[in-house]
Image 1: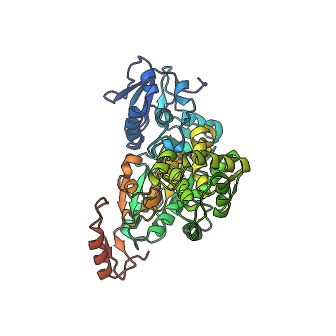
Image 2: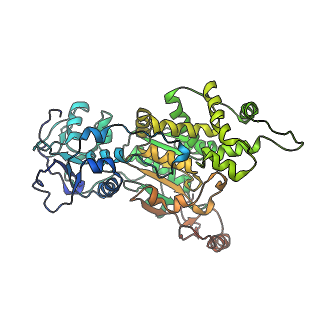
Image 3: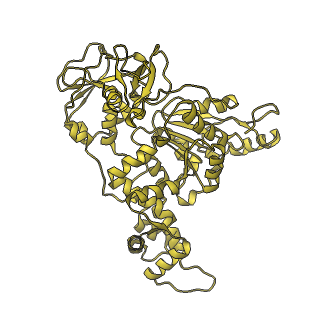
Length: 480
């Protein structure tokens, strides 16, 4: 264990909800009487999902806990991988031991040797130029005392005169206090509530005409300009290049990282080795080398195979199952790996392979996963209702282990079900991102009342949806 100074701040302000890690068999420390206690032993380390889920909620809610670490911490922090193909996984797949290790140490004192160590404060002194403090965690170079928070990043009240740093900033070697200024731009009340969402995951239901893009871009500016979240840790994901360009125009000058899912995936792929991207014409050329099909006038013999490739790589369906169910792609179960081998030999990717290859790398390369998770520490995702299983798995892997995703969408506007997209991912958002806050935009600024009322009546027939209120905006209300 590294040499460190016992933390004078122990047990920390109640508002920060800090926990404590103790050695096996150690008593509950003073200040934590009545606090729930958990044990991480070898059995839990081997099957960590249940405890990780419980600790995630306590971390999000800033509820103290005592964790008795009876397992080898080296086992907990060992990198995880899986040899399963992406199509063999559900979108709810997670590296649960990785999550458990994160939650064990994210917001806890280390009391294993009997002396409380706050490692985030130690790191702030070693890497961010801070000094010791007798009233908080550290003293900044300007003389202010500061707490170094390990909870979900957002404003925290009742901390007295000390300012608040965050472990994310300290990890980058920076000692910039967290800001809590309100957005400068005028926003409607429902839009403002979404934009200033505090911390942790959030689902924003944004019906047509409600100002979805405005909320996304205002949230992005708010995180960067008002809260001081580092650009290195934040990525906004638009569904297509046109939407991404609009977001860039609306956030000009911020230096924000705004990508499509495919460009994010390509960036991940290029962390391994640079690949060129081929078009559909090149795909057909490759398929022509692998399959023998009858040439029938006015029929495209390769289109079924292109669709089957999408079903495997975006809908995460087994190649053999796709072949059996479709009935028009003979030999596809064998063609699928052969086609991917040709892509690899030529060091190229097609459109869907960007996503699928990125998933493979995230699942098998912990070093690449860590780099992707850094830029996805705070992830804003547009058109969430159109995510396919592969897209959702990509988002979850990049957002892990903290899962701080700000998702915007409308379950009544799903359009890409052919690739496995489903509004269920938005409707059941808490399943994928537990503990999420919910915000709803309720005003349609685009259409007159009679059109809005007719749309509400029609959409009410959808069976599985988020209940929502939609009304037409008044002339003097905020525009979208």
